[in-house]
Length: 522
Image 1 (spheres, helix red, strand yellow):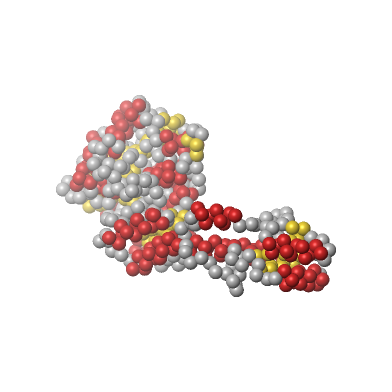
Image 2 (image 1 turned 45 degrees about the vertical axis):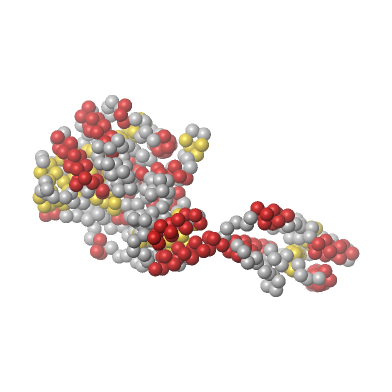
C-alpha cells in the first residue's frame, strides 16, 4: 500500500467539469485554493465567474492542453450516461466518456498528488460494473492507487437523500487514509417521527423517490424532461408544494442565492438554476474530503476483504497494483444529526399547480407502486381544493374591477348627513403615514376613523353569502379581506385612534347616530 499522506494545506486545486463549484467551494471551506475551473455550460460558467473571480476560467476541456501546477485535480464528470434517470448507455457515452480528457491531462501535466472524481452509484451496477472496471483499470495503468466510497449527503446534516460515489486516487499516498477513516454507525442515529415527506411529482408510474423527512436526490432533469425540484408533503398542514430555489441551493450546502447570477443581460431563470443545483456536488461532502486531505487518519485494515474479479462492485472498495479490496464501511462518514425537513425550509412551499397535481395523482393511482393511504387521501383533497381555487372567468373579473372602492351610495348618503350637522371630516385619506389603509371618513381632531364595509366583500355575519361556484377561491379571497380589516383596526387602535366599522345593510340614520355618539364621547 502507498504511504499515508502527511497532510499538506493548502492544496492547489484544478476543478474540471466544475458545474457551479460544489467541490471547489467545499475544498475552499477546508482551507484549499482554487487555481482553475473548467466548465462548458454557459449558465454554470456564469456562476463560476461570479463566485470564483480569482481562478483561471476555461470553457472546453477538449481544448485544454495542460493544467497549471496543482496538487489536486477534481472532476464531477457528467453522469447522464451512467444514471438511472439518464440513458444508461455507459462510460462510453458522449457525455460520461469525456472522462478520457481528465486522463489525458493527467499524462500531459506534472503529476498532482491527488485526483478526486464524483459520480452516481449506478455506475457500480451499469453493464455489470463495466464503467468502474474501466475507470480503475485506467488509473492503475497510470500508476495510481485508488479508493472509492459511496457517501450520503444526509450524513452532513442536510435533509437531502443524495448518494454519490467519491473516487480518490494518488501515485504517492494511500487514499484509504482519507476516505475510510470516518464512519458512523447509522443504527445509533436517532430519527424522530417525520414531519414532512419528499417525492418526485414528475414521476408516479415506475418510481416515486419517497423520502422520510428529506427530499429525494435533486436532479438536473426529470421524468417529464424538465429541470424541476421534488415535491414536499407536510401532513400537519396538508401542504403539497415545491421548495424555493434558495432552499434548493441550501439543500446542496450552498449559500442562499449562490446561482442567482446573470447570463449576459438576463438573470438565470428558476428552471435553469434548478438544473444547475440538481447537477451539483454537495458542498459539505467536498469539505469533509478537503479536511481529511489536510489531516489524514489511521485506516482500520480489518475492514478489508479481498475483492475477486468476478464479484460485483461493492459500495466501497480500494485497489493498488491490480489488487482490490472490498471495504466494510457505511455511507455516513460523520455524525451530524439531520435537520428535519420542515425545520430546514426557510421559504414557503409553492403549491403544485392543479395540472401538475392531477397528472401526478393520475399516474400514481394507475401504477402498481405501494400507496400510503394517508398520502393518497391528502393528494385527492389537495386536488379538490385546487379545483375550487380556479380563478374567476374574465367576465367575473371585469365585474369585480367595476365595483366602486369609494363614493358608494351608502357613503354618499352618510356624508350628506354628516355635513348637514357641520362636523369637520375628511374622506378616503391616510391617517398614519406608515399605514396604507384609508378609512372612508376621518375625524382627525377627534381621532375617529370610520369604515363603511359592504356585506359581501367584508363577510357580514348576517348577510354574507359567498358564491356557490368556485367556492374555494371566494372563501380564500373573502377571508383575506377579513384578516386585512382586523389588522387595520388593530394598527389604528394601537396608535390611539377610535375605529368604527359600519355595515352596508344599516340605514343612514343608524350609521349617523353611531358616529355622532362616538364623536360626543370624545
